[in-house]
Length: 288
Ligand SMILES: O=C([O-])CC(=O)C(=O)O
Ligand SMILES: [Mg+2]
Image (cartoon, rainbow, N blue to C red; front, top):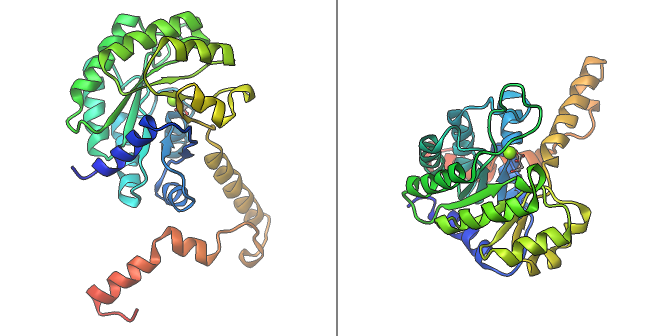
């Protein structure tokens, strides 16, 4: 299977004893930079997918086709294993099955399916959850949709910040019983909450955004957390850089005086120019 080694790398992190930070990636350039800097995996957040592909906020406007296409571009550009935020699986449990098939074909190393009610319901300002039963059905559908058994499927719940930590634990245990590979939590606010989650479950844990108190990697590792997200600063940095550059140009700065641009060396590395030159020599009869 073409993407198996990426998936096995993600699995080895989950079955290891350390906690790592993923690089937040969203396109061919960012994934190559993350790979070159030595990040063990990339995280493709739903919020970032929306922003990169549509320029929109994270309100479930992006389609599965658009998400999978962006994943496919990243898979082509780099062999870095990527964990994809597949939101609620783009519909009900039947849609979840299709979502897993498409993201598997697009080269994802792993994906998360969450129990948030998406898109937001009419008249509801606050995020809601689907029922535990529907959540369990989605996890089963995700597992049934996988044809490469090495693809990592994570059950995700945001219950800790929507209902209660007790509800988060109840849901996590139910998802664990379906056979998912890991549990992904958002909204865990304290060490006491994380310790309770760890004690009640047995699968590797992935933490979405977490407070300062939950940032020490050795503590997280001791609580079976194997992956800890750090938000999505790279796309914010890229947005600021594009803003500054366009603003300077608009204000009349000559291109040669622009600051903060990628050097020719960095650009060549990102484009894998040495490989392209070698191929051009072999295949087009050009000088190396
Ligand atoms: O999974 C993540 O990276 C956090 C999240 O939900 C998002 O950014 O959409
Ligand atoms: Mg998300």
